[in-house]
Length: 319
Ligand code: KG4
Ligand code: ZN
Image 1 (cartoon, protein in one colour):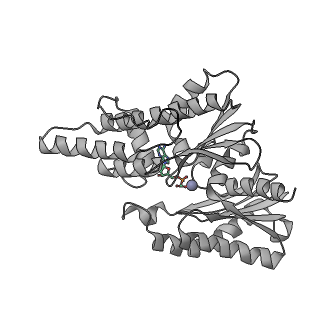
Image 2 (tube, helix red, strand yellow):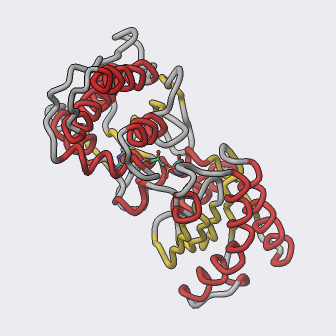
């Protein structure tokens, strides 16, 4: 089954053609980072305008790289939620128009499901599997007992991890998107600053990151007031340590409790080097639990993952 995936939920305009949920025939991502950089974050109006300008070109490029036409496609999958509403509408309208013109089946995919299925591109799922979703808008632990069965077992009560990375990065003068920059900087420092590890209830799987963000802000302000130097690299490493420790500990503890056979990482922050290394070290200690992480290219927003999720959504719904 050939699926055309379309993704426009935030600041990437993307289209991809994927066979049977994993074989990537073409993969086009136009990133708007440059358009938002000077504002230090995504400006919704600018995002929708850029999607409108690029969507047709990006879809045409996906077809031309694949050497295919609309008539070759069996299904269209488009991100329909969550995301910036004006941006989502651009993708939904484009997908709807193509489905109508080509008389194709259309599925509306949840962006988070897309991030989870980014893992299927390179690895099989082994159920029960536990997904840690860490993106700019979400931080969730989701248990899956089969394809397209999602049980939310924990989530952030305030900020998402990616959002926290972006805000802390900005505070120490890094450019948007600050998450990957902060990750790089953290590799060059040592976790010498005392920042909190916020576990909430140890037996539950909810997260909270706003307290950590405030702790960094207070630390920076106090140092400034005292006229003391701050090591940005050490601060980045300390912040990363506090985030990663809690994410890994909660995930491993949930993996034990639910007896999962696999842990998967999903979302933009799954590209984080500190998180990938620490999760691997701890998952290796568990018996018969596989750890799956998408290639860096499929961690951040793309349309391949939407096509992969759309394929399973369609198969599940048609059962
Ligand atoms: O999944 P994504 O592309 O978009 C959303 O669905 O939100 O995630 C983007 C988020 C941003 O907050 C970005 O700063 C963060 O993922 N991110 C990272 C890294 N790469 C991307 N955060 C920490 N370390 C990274 N290496
Ligand atoms: Zn995303």
